Amino acid sequence: MEKPKKFPDQEQVLPGEQKKMNPQPEIIREDYKGSDKLKNKVALITGGDSGIGRSVAVHFAREGADVAIVYLSESEDAQKTKEWVEKEGKSCLIIEADLQNTEHCDNALKQCIDTYGKLDVLVNNAAIQFPKDSIQDITMEDFDTTYKTNIYAYFYMCKIALNYLKEEGCIINTSSVTAYRGSDHLVDYASTKGAIVSFTRSLAKQLASGNIRVNGVAPGPIWTPLIPASFDDVSDFGQDTPLGRAGQPSEVAPAYVFLASKDSSYITGQFIHVNGGEVVGA
Image (cartoon, rainbow, N blue to C red):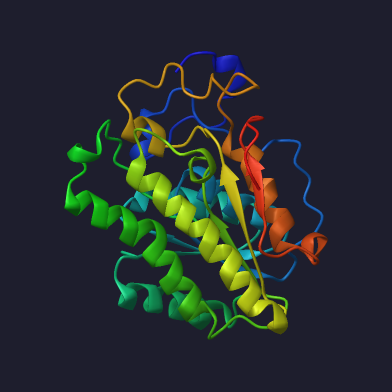
């Protein structure tokens, strides 16, 4: 990955997958000023150990929220996110869980409730991808893993979270630009992201009468640990966007702040497209 001037190096050393990243992703802008948009709120974020999830956790904390993050196995990365959140003066609960397992989903939410006593915002963000140039190369094992991680887990987490979310609660689901324009090397991944869009819109209609809003963010090419972990060559990653570069996690997370706050109180069933200028269908 070249063009370091476009990706400010914000951390000296990062554990786990993030060690492989050069340059390091920007988690939050130094000049981002919180304004208590999420004061006294509690948010649970899946895939919160790195990338977009970490950035969302830190932005939420700067806006006044305590957070719980769920991660699969990168304990060092999760601990680093916890340190970032605590530097913002807020609490961070880290929960190791395999969200393909419904009992793990249930336990993760119970730990959040046991610790904080409530849940105001659920962010479904965990995802996995196995790039393949042909559908014939996609194994059924990888296909199952992709679906169980990327959409089954969203369904499980929403279903269980509704036992705790109250009126004015929020659910925010992470989709992708690939849901809208497809991807020839991510057929299974893109299809799960399309399912997330339909799931979000449908659940939003179902929960509107209870004043629980359900929205989503559909990022384009964002410089996160998932990218170098998935692709051998990332030298031109994001350069085909109108802005000519990949985005930073710090450029995506404010969309989640907006959707979690009262600023978006009249918005449900919608997606924000943070994709470097690619025009996609609504």
